[in-house]
Figure (cartoon, rainbow, N blue to C red):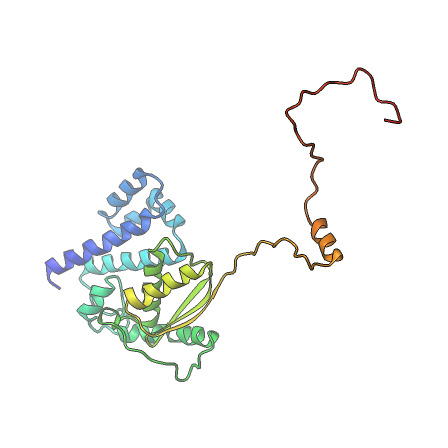
Length: 261
């Protein structure tokens, strides 16, 4: 790899690394430490206390990506970047452009994740033997199933209008399977628009459920039975007695009222 290309890749990796840590960095001091650590040996950076604190704040997905980035930076420094760590064959430039931190060629990545992908597809109700296939846009054609899934999720996470806590995404042979629940129909439409129109992924199996908001109980109708009306009123919270206020002056009695009053 040419020196200029290696520097471009290195800059991309460091920028992505900083963005991941930026999500959990609480102070500018944390970010300054991050920048300083990027300029020293990875082994020394791992010993830095501030770096350990930042790593602890990352979720599992982000930690995995940081580890992949650090591995790619180490391979760049040693001259082994661009070679598959499993089969030792060159990784295509197009795949490296799409996934700069990947340690695997597309063939090895597909083999490595095949059991996970098969299991996930079966759980979603698709036959494992011959699931549907779909062609992918050029920019995603060299991604494995898991890598495509991560790319889809990353695209959705970038939209702060979406709540993805109950959403599950599985990709298999270019088909995107969606399962779970979203809070509203509007979010459902935004999600599908992002996947199909923005990303250009036309093959989507949509099994998303839209959460229903709790309905407000309507007043009783004229035909409501007395028992139903009584039950409805008994459900209301108990309140203190309410006295109607008037504009007239209040004259305090001069003596307590008698028993007959």
